[in-house]
Length: 319
Image (cartoon, rainbow, N blue to C red; front, top):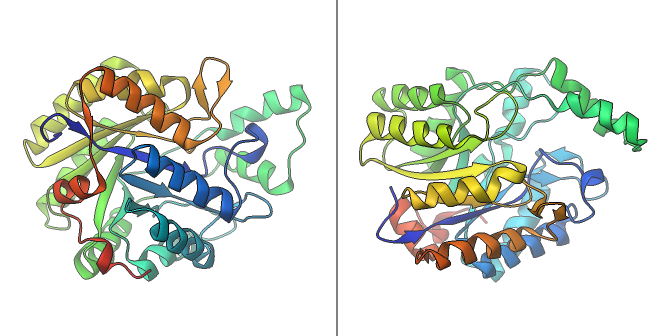
């Protein structure tokens, strides 16, 4: 749970959930991602969670060369913990090939933290196609293919994948994990692999609400999630929560009041208020920080986050 009265803020700068046509403010180029990340850290984020995109098109990619540009430049300008995804989706590969690509950058750069998805997920991005057609939005070929893939593509995370991530990143490289749990059953999966010794506490558990195929953005799910995590992990976990779109501020605030930490950013939501697009992840960090400080909570520094999460430190990464 949260230490004292301080909250760790994670900023998810850019992911695969949203695409460039949805907001003119979504960071796509290397310079945009770096500036958005640095600004979020300056606004109070202790952790920056990163996905990569092709700078010219915005297409999600696993290319380590792009990640390296992010990592080196952000590290030069901020002390925030840098957290790489292990779940970056790419089309056109077999599951085995896709896993190799997902792990290229984390294995190469050995960051302090990586994400670790706790199970499969059937996203439904294809449901956006009707609105896109109705509104006459022009899509790039890759964007249409990416959305269509939701009809047949499942985010796969079998136990063989989990065991490999746990050993090659956690055991061999000392990487800590952000365990992304999209459903209550994912908590039980984490308990299972922990009981087998694959991963060790403190477990940094991220509740993910509001994405198709997972838990919906309902306050009752927040309560159920915390109660289940308490049952399974006792004092051996540090809890954080993210929520998609308009649920972001409501549910992250609720989680913080309940003793949790929070994640915001352009990966999870493009909005700063009703009908108002955020101009940056830093906008969202400042907004949630203002709410939390109004509630007499303090914002954790990167040093405090490192201590609580027991990361290996910025001096032991490969960038």
